[in-house]
Image 1 (cartoon, rainbow, N blue to C red):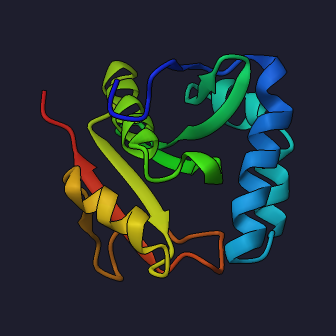
Image 2 (image 1 turned 90 degrees about the vertical axis):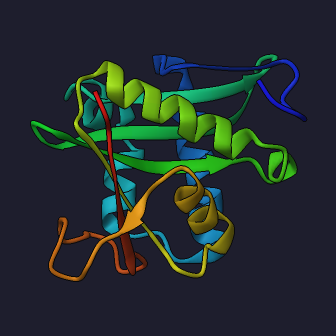
Length: 162
């Protein structure tokens, strides 16, 4: 994969990943922001919210340990949202976040999306830098979808070429 990524496997969600998906996301959200009702809803049922609705959750594993994740959620017939993306603190700065996002974009293409949408917080500077480096552009206030999260103050879009 990339430097610092030896032994990491990125694969689709399995029901046994649910606890790790929740705990990985709760850790970063509570460290940077506050857990919201919508977080509790989606983190409590990743299979139902993401997978069963035609999206996916990708998990990064190092051996048996789950060290990162990203979810894909349909907004409309053409647009998948990349959400709930995180990497365990000890694996940040290794290229794992980029590998997860690249895998998520590839999965969006495989699922037939024409666009990839995301919401974030401007204070997450490394994440915003990563999104921009992969071609995401910031949306104007009147573009995109209203966010259910108070912490989201930036919305971005990546058109996918055929």
